[in-house]
Amino acid sequence: MNKTALWIETFSGKKINPLDADKDLLDIVDIAHSLSMQCRFNGHCKKFYSVAEHCVKTAEYIILTNAGGGKNIARTALFGLLHDASESYLCDIPRPLKPHIYNYFEWERKISNKIFAKFAGSIPSKKEWAEVLSGDNAMLSMEALELASSKGKDWNLEKAKPVKIKIECLPWQDAKRKFLNVFRRLAPRVNIHRTPPACAPA
Image (cartoon, rainbow, N blue to C red):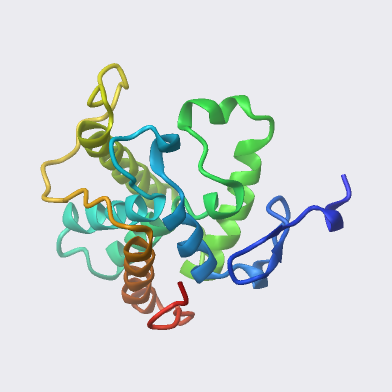
């Protein structure tokens, strides 16, 4: 494979090889923009619901279920916000399909680790990642209940802890803005100073 010929153009005009990304070219605005334009469940939901909003809600869930956790919870919540950031370069693929795509998990792991290192300072610990996966699965359960025709029947979903999180189905512009605002709020709390502009270009 000719890696120099393998690239996608991002929203900001950068050329990124999703399989061997240059960490310096990873851009939080590109990530927020792409995720805000991608619909969850491969588009098979009652209303448009972006991956960006899902990431925001996952971060919120982690915070709400760990009240008083301080800096460590801010860090875990930041990982929660970024847990699907790889999809801005690889695309959102339905969970049941991922194991059947050759090398997908390796591609996902590689670019995710670069994203975590750049925007959260390091990759998650096993404990932090378990917390993120728990939040991700909890949000999947809530999202399926509201957005799937079957309400998640036969999906074998984990039961979410009872917290007040509203599935808003935000327009992409609002989802992008909210993603960046949450990043801007969490990143300084884990000593990450690479923050996006207050109003990222739409």
